[in-house]
Amino acid sequence: MILSEVKDAISERKICVLIPTYNNEKTLKRVIDGVLDYTENIIVVNDGSTDSTSEILKHYTQINVLNLPENKGKGNGLKTGFRKAKELGFDYAITIDSDGQHYPDDIPVFVEAMVDENEDVLLIGNRNMSQDGIPKKSSFGNRFSNFWFWFETGIKLEDTQSGYRLYPLHKIPKKYFTPKFEFEIEIIVRTAWRHVPVKNVPIKVLYDPAERVSHFRPFKDFTRISILNTILVTITLLYIIPRNFVNNFKKKSFKRFIKEDVLESEGTNRIKAFSIALGVFIGFSPFWGFHTLLVISLAVLFKLNKVLAFVASNVSLPPFIPFIIVASLFLGSPFVSGNSDFLNQEWNFDLVKNNILQYVVGSLILASTMSVITGIVTFLFLNKVNPENN
Image (cartoon, rainbow, N blue to C red):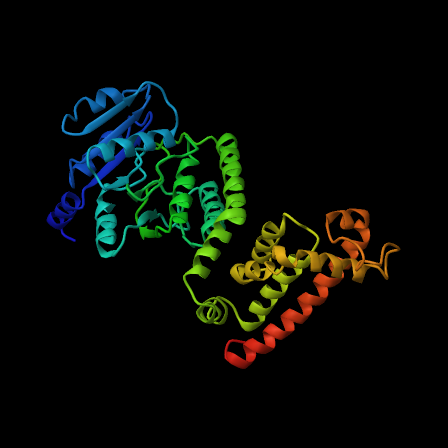
């Protein structure tokens, strides 16, 4: 896109540029001047800077400046800017860091990518962290973040930590739980959970140690990010994956579900069979309350199909639980001295409590047996209907 087309698109699509800043007096003016080449729709959030930032901003009367009385973190600055942007009637916000690592002349990359999309999308600048000059700790942190983002959303990106982004303001969550650097992880994960596409676009990056001021505190902020990822993973396993499966299943007939989610799903026939076998094993296992956590974690660990494993783990639906309990107790009775007269007793959890070892041994036998049978039958079935996917 030529410059005039970029300016027109920014105006027509109601795009603003949001610049959170904290003690970046060396680079702030250069960043603002670069953005002004494309638009005056600029919101600068001065997050309690103690250097000459306030004096620099006084010279820019044509832009919106929000001066916060004290530093509360980048996440808080972004949230403040998002609220202001929506108040001013903007639909999209391009965020750019004020430390000089981002090039304002990459703004057209975001605008063009957004225009090409047929739906609202959250765009993240891909800095190509493998290039020369990128600090190793930054490259490692990005790979770490990419992995957990994929685990939590199923979306593979090359860069999830870049602060150069385009947000669809009316599609992102309204409330957040984190105020600092971890906010940028929370917002992309929770936006992806709302079924908004999250994609990378290529950008340039400059790491100049003489100019760049980083406020990232390795121990404290990494700890906060790790805690956030623990919470997000837990929500993913216990709510997001089951929710997506149920919603997906409701939209399809059983025949279409088998075709799209089994036959045409990710992986070879062998992988699919192992995935279903794993799910069945976990479903019949005695680890009640942890089935979803276990099956998803093991599917990721062994690189199996998470959806198929999760579906198969639901063999222990509530109506079948009494029969599973009795079958487990029956199979465990030859190996553990205990009760074997189950037909004349009430089938409830007291029966399990009074014969716990017998139940555990029997349930593992039942889980192993059904897992092997289901895996073999699934493999033979898939080879018959889809032999080329071996």
